[in-house]
Length: 313
Length: 267
Image (cartoon, rainbow over all chains, first blue to last red; front, side, top):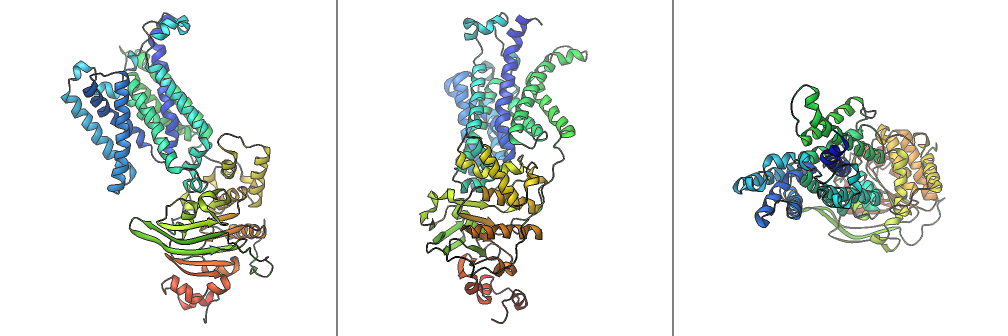
C-alpha cells in the first residue's frame, strides 16, 4: 500500500480506532477500581434502542439524531439501573444486567419492526461497527493532511472522537485528586468535603460520553472491550494509578493499531483470502494483551486484601 | 519507636478548654426504617482522648459518619469548636476502618499520606519539597518511613493502620476521628498508635476513637461515650465507665467475672 492509499483508506479508521480505544480506556480505569466495569458494557448495549427510537422519530440514522438518541438511552439506563438497585434492593451488577439486557432486547424488537434495510442499521452493524468504511475519500496523500478542502471532507467521526478524547483527558487531569480520593476512600473524601455522589455520577457520565460517541463511530464491541481490557492489563503493570492510566492508553492504542492491521493483513499471512472485521480484531487483540499481562505483568502476583470483617455499624 | 506506657491520664494534663471540641445535639440517623442513632447528645472535651464504646450495631461508626457528612441525619446539630460541622471539615481528620479500604488499589504508602494534603493543595498545585518533607516526617512518626514506596496491599494489618494514622497526622487537624484503629492489629502497632494519640493530646488536639476493647479503656482514654443507639452514659472515664453503665449498654450480657477482670468488679 503506498502513502496515498494509506492516507485515503487506512489513516482515518486507524486514528478513530485509537481515539475510541483511548476514550474508553481512560474512564475504564476508574470504573474497574470502583467495581463498576460492567457499566461500560451496559451503556454500549442500551444505545441501540436509543438509536432506533431516534431514527423512528427523526427519519435520520446519522449524526446528531443518532448521538442524541444514544445519549438519551444512556441517561434512561443510568436512571433505571439506580431505580432497580434501590427499589429492587439488588446488587448493582445485577441491576445493570437486568436493565441493559432488557433495553438491548427492546432495541432489537424495535429494529425488526422498523424498515432496517432502508436505514443501513442492522444488528451486526450496531455491534461491530464499520471501521473500515470510515475512509477519507478526498485525501490524495500525506499532503492532504494540510489541505483545508480535503480536511473539510473528513469523516465527522474523527474530530468528534478526538474532541471527546481531549475532553476526557482534561477532565481527568483537572479533577484527578477528587476522582482518586473518592474512588480510593469515599469516606475520607466525604469528610474532606468533596461531593462524592456528584463525583461518582461524573465518572458514569464520562463513561457514557465515551461509549456513546465511540458506539456511533465504531460500534459496540470496541467500547465494551476497551473499558475493561486495557485498564485491566495496565493494573498488572504498575502500582501507581497515574502510570496505570498511561499504560492503559498505550495498550488501547496498540490494540487498535495492531487489531486493524491484523484484520486487513492477518488472513493473508496465514494463506487465507479477504479480511476480517477490524472492530472484532481490535477487541480480540485487547483481550490478548490482557492475557499476556496476566502471564507476564510485573504486578500480577498482588497480595490479596487482608482479612478483617466489617465490625460495628 | 515510641512505647505507649499505660499511664492513667489526668493530673499532668492542663485543664480542658471550656468549649468542647465536638458537640452533638439530638442526633437521629436511620438506615431505611431502622433507627441507627436515636436522639444522641454528646460533648467531647478539647485536648482529650475520648472513646466511643458499644456493642456491634450500636451506631458507633454511624456517629462518626454523621460527623464526617457521609450519612445524612434525620435530625440533629453537630458543631466543631462552636462552628457548624459543614463549615469545619478542614479541622477534622479521619482514620477509616481497615475493612472499608480497597487494599488492592494502585497506590503507595507515601501517596496515601500525601492525600491528607490534597484539599489544602487544591486541584492542581503539586506537592513541593515542604509537603514531601511533611509526609516523610509523619511516616517516620508512625515508624513507617522505610516502607514509603510500598503498595498498600503488601503491608501487614498493623502497618496499614499506621499509614492511615500518618495521613491523619499530615492534615494537622484539631479533631482526629479513628474507627476501630486497634481491630486486628499486633501489640506493637497498638502501642505505637496509642503513643502517637497521646502525643497528639499533649499537643492540645482532640482524639475520638471508636473502640471495642473494654479492658484498655481506663488506660487509654480520658472521656467515654457509652452508646447503644441511644447515649447510655457519657463523661470522664472515672465517672461514666462503670459496671452498671456497661451492663446497660451491652444489655446485661457482660459476665461479672469479666467486669472484675477489667477492674470494674464489686460495684
